[in-house]
Length: 354
Ligand code: AOF
Ligand code: ZN
Image 1 (cartoon, rainbow, N blue to C red):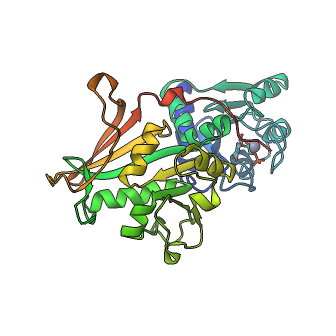
Image 2 (image 1 turned 30 degrees about the vertical axis):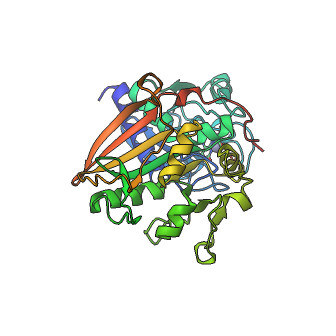
Image 3 (image 1 turned 45 degrees about the horizontal axis):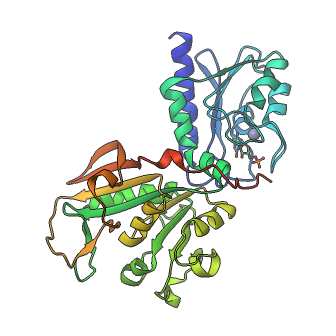
């Protein structure tokens, strides 16, 4: 293997290390690291949760003392100041690998770009990945990057709907629009999120746990967006936040509860409906990804519950999306979209990095 493909293989391994901890590290990002001498793996590690050692620390703890011929691969630029844990750059200056390969720069303004000059000044070669692998490292930390630079969490809206765009029939029954494969995929989505959010109507009709069904999965923050509908006591389980009571929601501006969630350390929100909440999030430009599961069914009933009841508009004013993935989930079809305006989210009121 040539050096470039060794580097790519090792960064892929580092990404795989981090993958296992997506949804467990907030408010920190998931990060993975491996150390290798040529093609020989010396150690690997991941960041497993805020306040615990960083990926580099866990990885280097497995490695032999002499790293003079070794390369450390890390999906995110090593940190350079003391936070909840000491700076990884200090450890690298002590352990002195010959080379450090970084998947992507740290969007955290406290660290961004600093590791490169610190390490290079000490004679350690630093390279930053490019191309597809760099994109994958950036995608891994997209929720962290949005949270740390804007003070807003990354929001995914997931809806299962019929081909004619209904998420429940006129009796509000939504079980089951999608099939078993799509429902399994939702479990995987919940696992990756820090908080799962729904509107009060969905709570009243479905009483969803909003928790991943896997037993060892960490509990997710359960966010209920209420307005006029009251949340019954049995729906106020532990881990539940009620938007009007706990997150300063005024019943209209959804940015407020989202900012409040971000301040509480939530980087990644999964919204599971209902339709009106999904539409409001879209109209208020708060959605990063819209994930639609289309079930091969028709209801043809104007009294059924519409998936995305946005305000009527003409074609030139249509809300538009950029599809980035299409996938078969059993008999259903998953369509993943980014709102065409997502890139224009204003960069303001960054969350404190204290
Ligand atoms: C992580 N894990 O593996 C790396 C991080 O408060 P601390 O000390 O845990 O520092 C958190 C910051 O460190 C985080 O915001 C990110 O910018 C940087 N790198 N963080 O949690 C890691 N390498
Ligand atoms: Zn660190």
